[in-house]
Length: 96
Image (cartoon, rainbow, N blue to C red; front, side, top):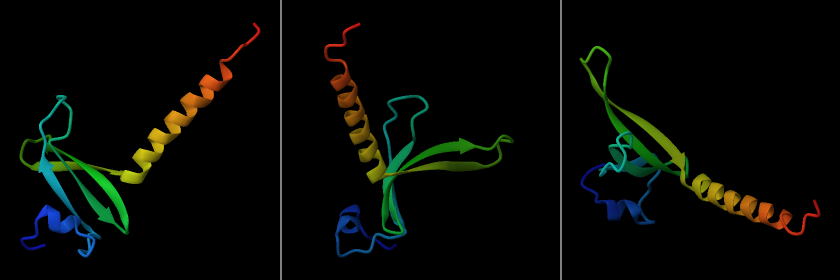
């Protein structure tokens, strides 16, 4: 990957496919991720969350990762808003 900076990775001329970045995070919750960032796989952009762990025998350190599609997270929020609006529409003047 060389010495590219995050800004260069965000540049549309730079091919981000199969690449990403992780940054150390300030943990707001005890079980929150230690690192966070984003990546692109097969043209789909993902959020990355990473936790530092130690194996059961305490011999090996490792990271566990979770990927969440960026467009799905915004679609989920839109779906929640639509569902809430639909529920509000049904609550008007119910006769019983």
